[in-house]
Image (cartoon, rainbow, N blue to C red; front, side, top):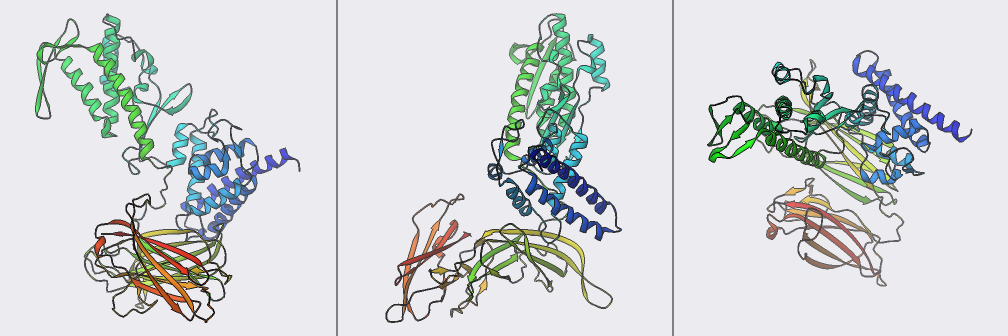
Length: 614
């Protein structure tokens, strides 16, 4: 098969698979019958899509390039650099797609699954549905994505919280057009659309204006026809232009202020000026905070008298408002780009999130494989949100994946949460899950689903209303060195040491980041492959360091450290130590670093763990 045929085949598969996913997904969401078979088909189509993405991304067909450009809208920068050299947002062939781009995108998509307990990648499904909708309603031949600005925003964020059109058919405004003699017609005002994403961030609003047959993101002044942006002279024609521009800005900002409070001050400024101007020969008293502004309009020269006799022509006022509005629009666009995320998923909007603290620790089994332990627990108060005496069922799904995020094993267990202590700090004991058998890079995902516990007629506990959900990923975990030839140590396991007599390895795990310095916190770890000396003893030292860190990980001051030397008879050792944190109260983020030095072999191994001390 020649290259052109290969590209055409890849393009056809992209279209076919995407349409299949969207169609089956619509059936699943819209029908309660046959959903099991539809779900199987959806999973199959999703996997087929990943196969197409893996094999066909290197093709140079317009369909494939368009699809990758649509992905470009939501990809983080580090993934973009791994997918292509250059910017795919520019016209085709402005960027060179890398040879391993397909595998990179497949791995990334598998990592985006927000609910790993289900067989379907809901985020991938959501993206496909958004693309299908945008390609139906927001088409553009001028962008490499095949979408106009509305479509590109829709792919990133989905349906807006609020969608309105700024209209210019209000009677008050149309009357003004005819009263002063039409400088412009209603048809001169551009088609537009205003989208608000207040559920994502307060800065999330976009104004789209149609220009040259295509919608693009614009500022509010671009809602004015060009003839109403300049030419505010003192002659009669200039005065008519000024009056219509003021009336247009009032109707624009009145409608926008109802959707986003950030426009309220502009509306007030223009409305106050017009209201004062429409009362010739009278003194208007307006309250601004605790002060009063008094103004008088001279009908003959169309100027406003300010306190102290200062005159301000209407032409000067309208030009100043247009200039300042353009600057404010630029500032708002900058702030929006700063505060709005790269993309947003609505998968979790239906249910509140369950805050869960999670820690992981890797240990070396005697057969050379790695055992991974997960320590987790809902944060204090997260389970009981009311004073009601309720019981719960907590479903925990652990997904064990290889380095490419392909599922190796899925395990689900059920925890009954009964007789939960009353009070806002109610908490269950820290839980532990174990995964075995790793020898290379791997990934772990966990999902927690909290249900209200109800009893059926037989008295058995069954799940009732689904209350909260959470998911977390432990990415790019490396198996410990199981060769037996090098010094190795486990991760640091945070533990609560309640007894003065240390029970090595048996203390209660502590899964949270934050901790009070009064709590008896310790760390447990294991050492492997210590070398024996000529006297058949092992000799090693352990150094503990505690250092205060900034949020970006930099050390804020010299660490406090202590070292202890040991002599033993085993190549594998266990250590558990109580950390003295009494002098670190309110220290913020601290790093606990443990270094083991094999004094016989002259080798070292280091592990660290972070806490936020309160």
